[in-house]
Amino acid sequence: MKFARAVPGMILLLALAVTAAPSASQMIEGPDGPVEFVGLQEWTARELFDAIQELAPELPFHACAAVMERDLGFADAAAMSYRTTGSDEVYTVVVGVEDATRVRPRTIGSDTLILPEALESLKAFAGENPGLLSLAAQVLYVRGDADRTAEVAERTGVDAEAFAEVWSLLDRADRRRDDRLALELLARDSSWETREVAAFVLSNFADRDATWHALVLSLTDPQGRVAAMAAGVLRGLTVTGDSPSPVDWTPAEEPLQALFDGTNPWHFATTLQVLVATDIEPEFGRRLARERPDLLLAFAGAEHRGTRASAIAFLQAISGKDFGTDVEAWTAWIHGQPN
Image (tube, rainbow, N blue to C red; front, side):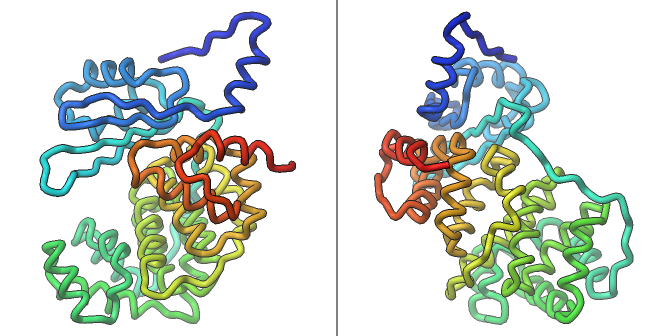
């Protein structure tokens, strides 16, 4: 593990330097293509790459996040791979969060609640068809459209009838009662399988701000499958042809602060995309950026276009300005905001 070093008398200067600019992304050539490291503080890209390769030479490099957390002392980490069309080259973006105080997963409940038949059926279906509910969450926009469902089924290699069964089970959720139950399950139930299904059921209630708040809170769930389901539902709800209604995000400030600090960086880009799609109130967005700028600016400064796009779109939405990819300008703007 790397440790910070400070020369006596230079601590204030170092602190100001950290405040003034985010850590720049670092790029090296990996075994399958470029590897970009985002958010590093004490580690250099070369040191980290070599350490991962030494510890787990048999693993594909995009599986490095577990090694970073388990063996190298990172508080949280993520690694996303992108394949270039028509090429075998893989572009990997690695996000590292070194400061443990910035990672604050939500506390899960300790209860075991009784599920109504509709949710129990969904839970059983999810167990029998691993991954299908997560995929369905991301393509909620085809729900109720047989032709588009068939197109997605062909593209993903999933039987269209399987999607139809998912939609049928989801339709059975009681719209007068199961929104409150799903929220309660996410808050209190100890079973990650139950919380995963509850997050999926909330896709029925996109017209309620509490749904969006609960899904964002679930992005900080310590069980990755629950967080992934919440992220899938959020993407599915914002990719629809119709823009979602504006959401008042102030009641979800605590989980949003945790995500901006670096909790579960796998889903930080999704968080930013959802906030923009639901018309986050600019002043609230400016407060998030001002109080927790590091990861946001690190994403904005990424070389990978897909990684930086969500951060820049968020900054544009809350500022009304367009500094493009000029991270120094965005940094100056954020630190020029009044407290």
